[in-house]
Length: 102
Image 1 (cartoon, rainbow, N blue to C red):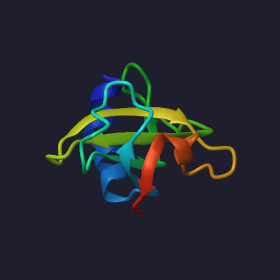
Image 2: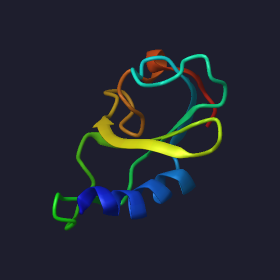
Image 3: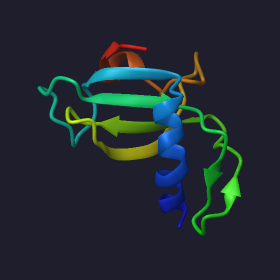
Image 4: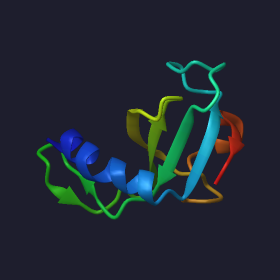
């Protein structure tokens, strides 16, 4: 139930109020690195959800990422460790993505 609530509430929140948007995925194993327009939306949502769907505080020291393909479809999302220098961005963002567009 937690994953369903993340899709229903957290994914739209991050897409509407991102702290950053990156284009050109370099480090994601399941991505087409040659595709133009593939983006990663990054954000710090107001809450997270437990396995049973219970609302919890956002995950400390983590950011939520939403991956969107060149057709504008969100196809993957997850929590990841935040960068040590900027807790609103994912760890190693400088080498994982080609360009920061927002």
